[in-house]
Image (cartoon, rainbow, N blue to C red; front, side, top):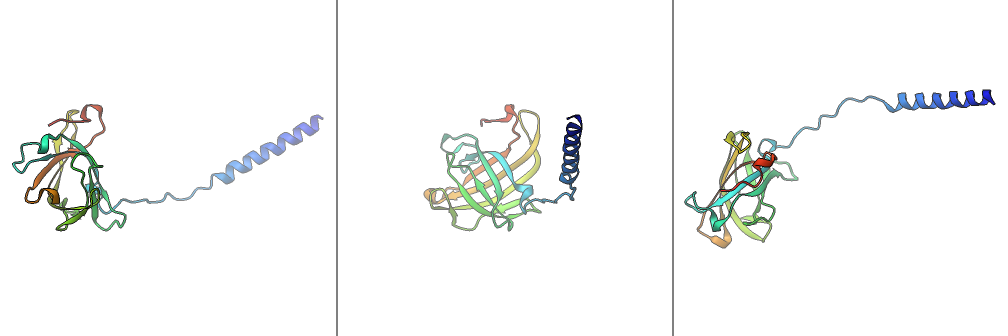
Length: 171
Protein backbone atom coordinates (compact mmCIF):
# COMPACT_ATOMS: atom_id res chain seq x y z
CA UNK A 1 0.00 0.00 0.00
CA UNK A 2 2.86 2.32 0.81
CA UNK A 3 4.49 1.47 -2.55
CA UNK A 4 1.22 2.25 -4.36
CA UNK A 5 0.97 5.64 -2.57
CA UNK A 6 4.55 6.57 -3.52
CA UNK A 7 3.95 5.46 -7.11
CA UNK A 8 0.78 7.58 -7.34
CA UNK A 9 2.52 10.57 -5.75
CA UNK A 10 5.45 10.24 -8.18
CA UNK A 11 3.04 10.07 -11.14
CA UNK A 12 1.11 13.12 -9.94
CA UNK A 13 4.29 15.15 -9.38
CA UNK A 14 5.63 14.16 -12.80
CA UNK A 15 2.41 15.29 -14.46
CA UNK A 16 2.41 18.54 -12.49
CA UNK A 17 6.02 19.34 -13.47
CA UNK A 18 5.33 18.44 -17.10
CA UNK A 19 2.30 20.76 -17.16
CA UNK A 20 4.24 23.64 -15.61
CA UNK A 21 7.11 23.48 -18.07
CA UNK A 22 5.00 22.98 -21.17
CA UNK A 23 2.43 25.64 -20.29
CA UNK A 24 5.09 28.33 -19.88
CA UNK A 25 6.08 28.32 -23.53
CA UNK A 26 7.54 31.78 -23.98
CA UNK A 27 6.76 33.75 -27.09
CA UNK A 28 7.87 37.25 -27.91
CA UNK A 29 5.66 40.16 -26.90
CA UNK A 30 3.29 41.35 -29.57
CA UNK A 31 3.67 45.00 -30.57
CA UNK A 32 0.09 46.25 -30.49
CA UNK A 33 0.74 49.80 -31.68
CA UNK A 34 -1.62 52.75 -31.69
CA UNK A 35 -4.07 54.38 -34.05
CA UNK A 36 -3.48 57.07 -36.65
CA UNK A 37 -5.07 59.74 -34.41
CA UNK A 38 -3.70 58.50 -31.09
CA UNK A 39 -2.20 61.92 -30.25
CA UNK A 40 -5.61 63.57 -30.59
CA UNK A 41 -7.82 60.94 -28.97
CA UNK A 42 -9.29 61.03 -25.49
CA UNK A 43 -12.05 62.22 -23.21
CA UNK A 44 -12.61 65.95 -22.84
CA UNK A 45 -14.65 68.45 -20.83
CA UNK A 46 -16.00 70.90 -23.44
CA UNK A 47 -18.44 73.81 -23.32
CA UNK A 48 -20.33 75.30 -26.28
CA UNK A 49 -20.21 79.08 -26.38
CA UNK A 50 -22.18 81.62 -28.37
CA UNK A 51 -20.37 83.24 -31.33
CA UNK A 52 -18.95 85.87 -28.94
CA UNK A 53 -16.78 83.12 -27.38
CA UNK A 54 -17.79 84.17 -23.86
CA UNK A 55 -21.47 83.39 -23.26
CA UNK A 56 -22.43 79.74 -22.71
CA UNK A 57 -24.71 78.65 -25.56
CA UNK A 58 -28.28 78.21 -24.34
CA UNK A 59 -27.07 78.45 -20.73
CA UNK A 60 -25.11 75.21 -21.02
CA UNK A 61 -22.05 74.03 -19.13
CA UNK A 62 -19.19 71.61 -19.69
CA UNK A 63 -20.13 68.16 -20.99
CA UNK A 64 -17.97 65.15 -21.65
CA UNK A 65 -16.84 64.56 -25.24
CA UNK A 66 -14.74 61.82 -26.77
CA UNK A 67 -12.41 62.06 -29.74
CA UNK A 68 -11.31 58.75 -31.24
CA UNK A 69 -10.30 57.08 -34.48
CA UNK A 70 -12.83 55.80 -36.97
CA UNK A 71 -12.96 52.10 -37.79
CA UNK A 72 -11.05 52.78 -41.01
CA UNK A 73 -8.14 54.23 -38.97
CA UNK A 74 -7.40 56.45 -41.96
CA UNK A 75 -6.55 59.72 -40.21
CA UNK A 76 -10.17 60.67 -39.58
CA UNK A 77 -11.68 60.84 -36.12
CA UNK A 78 -15.04 61.05 -34.40
CA UNK A 79 -16.06 63.97 -32.21
CA UNK A 80 -18.82 62.74 -29.93
CA UNK A 81 -20.68 64.31 -27.00
CA UNK A 82 -22.57 61.04 -26.29
CA UNK A 83 -25.93 62.73 -26.97
CA UNK A 84 -25.32 65.27 -24.22
CA UNK A 85 -26.99 68.60 -24.71
CA UNK A 86 -25.87 69.80 -28.22
CA UNK A 87 -25.99 66.19 -29.50
CA UNK A 88 -23.09 66.12 -31.90
CA UNK A 89 -21.30 63.14 -33.36
CA UNK A 90 -19.49 63.77 -36.59
CA UNK A 91 -16.41 62.64 -38.45
CA UNK A 92 -13.55 65.05 -39.12
CA UNK A 93 -10.32 64.98 -41.06
CA UNK A 94 -7.16 65.42 -39.01
CA UNK A 95 -3.64 66.72 -39.42
CA UNK A 96 -1.86 64.92 -36.60
CA UNK A 97 1.42 66.81 -37.13
CA UNK A 98 -0.34 70.14 -36.58
CA UNK A 99 -2.91 68.71 -34.11
CA UNK A 100 -5.68 70.28 -36.18
CA UNK A 101 -8.98 68.96 -37.52
CA UNK A 102 -11.89 70.05 -39.66
CA UNK A 103 -15.00 68.44 -41.09
CA UNK A 104 -16.36 68.40 -44.61
CA UNK A 105 -18.97 71.03 -45.50
CA UNK A 106 -22.43 69.82 -44.47
CA UNK A 107 -21.02 66.69 -42.86
CA UNK A 108 -23.43 64.12 -41.47
CA UNK A 109 -24.37 64.52 -37.81
CA UNK A 110 -25.23 60.97 -36.82
CA UNK A 111 -27.46 61.59 -33.78
CA UNK A 112 -30.24 63.51 -35.49
CA UNK A 113 -29.58 62.92 -39.21
CA UNK A 114 -28.74 66.56 -39.76
CA UNK A 115 -25.61 68.25 -41.01
CA UNK A 116 -22.84 70.23 -39.34
CA UNK A 117 -19.94 72.37 -40.45
CA UNK A 118 -17.09 71.82 -38.02
CA UNK A 119 -14.06 74.03 -38.70
CA UNK A 120 -10.88 75.42 -37.13
CA UNK A 121 -10.31 72.50 -34.76
CA UNK A 122 -7.09 72.64 -32.80
CA UNK A 123 -5.53 70.79 -29.87
CA UNK A 124 -2.86 72.53 -27.79
CA UNK A 125 -0.60 70.18 -25.83
CA UNK A 126 -0.14 70.70 -22.08
CA UNK A 127 -1.63 74.21 -22.06
CA UNK A 128 -4.39 74.01 -19.43
CA UNK A 129 -4.09 73.51 -15.67
CA UNK A 130 -6.99 71.69 -14.00
CA UNK A 131 -8.27 71.99 -10.42
CA UNK A 132 -5.96 69.12 -9.42
CA UNK A 133 -3.04 71.18 -10.75
CA UNK A 134 -2.56 68.75 -13.63
CA UNK A 135 -1.30 70.11 -16.93
CA UNK A 136 -3.51 68.80 -19.77
CA UNK A 137 -4.28 69.44 -23.44
CA UNK A 138 -6.81 72.03 -24.59
CA UNK A 139 -9.24 71.68 -27.49
CA UNK A 140 -11.07 74.26 -29.61
CA UNK A 141 -13.38 74.03 -32.63
CA UNK A 142 -16.26 75.89 -34.26
CA UNK A 143 -19.56 74.33 -35.33
CA UNK A 144 -22.51 75.52 -37.39
CA UNK A 145 -25.53 73.19 -37.09
CA UNK A 146 -28.20 72.96 -39.79
CA UNK A 147 -30.83 73.74 -37.12
CA UNK A 148 -29.08 77.06 -36.35
CA UNK A 149 -27.88 78.06 -39.83
CA UNK A 150 -25.68 81.15 -39.75
CA UNK A 151 -24.73 80.75 -36.08
CA UNK A 152 -21.21 79.48 -35.47
CA UNK A 153 -20.78 78.14 -31.93
CA UNK A 154 -17.35 77.99 -30.35
CA UNK A 155 -16.45 74.83 -28.43
CA UNK A 156 -13.64 75.08 -25.88
CA UNK A 157 -12.39 72.60 -23.34
CA UNK A 158 -9.65 70.51 -21.86
CA UNK A 159 -8.63 66.88 -21.57
CA UNK A 160 -10.23 64.83 -18.82
CA UNK A 161 -7.87 63.66 -16.04
CA UNK A 162 -10.18 61.27 -14.18
CA UNK A 163 -9.24 62.85 -10.83
CA UNK A 164 -12.27 63.48 -8.63
CA UNK A 165 -11.56 67.20 -8.21
CA UNK A 166 -11.46 67.63 -12.01
CA UNK A 167 -14.76 65.89 -12.73
CA UNK A 168 -17.80 67.98 -13.77
CA UNK A 169 -16.12 71.39 -14.13
CA UNK A 170 -18.28 74.50 -14.36
CA UNK A 171 -17.92 77.58 -16.52
